[in-house]
Image (cartoon, rainbow, N blue to C red; front, side, top):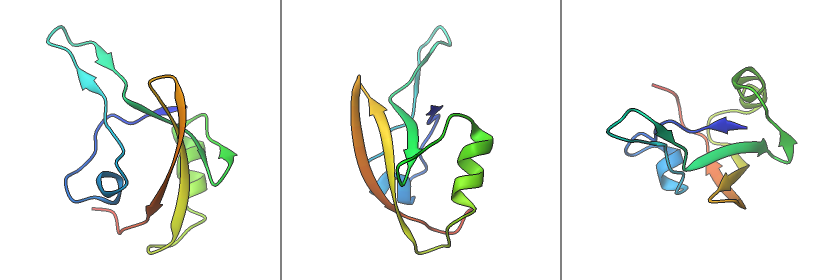
Length: 83
């Protein structure tokens, strides 16, 4: 899966409740949410994630399956224009 490193304020990801990784004072990354699928299609690399996202348009609502604290969670995200 793909570790979400950060979530921008006001973004669709924030509105959906997605959580970015936390970096410890020692520099270790502690993942919060890991994307494992989009609309039930597995994503295992950033390249596959970008390919999946290219199939949609701004305004589309997609289902993102994440791994959070050992639990599989599904969230809906309405896509917004990138920055």
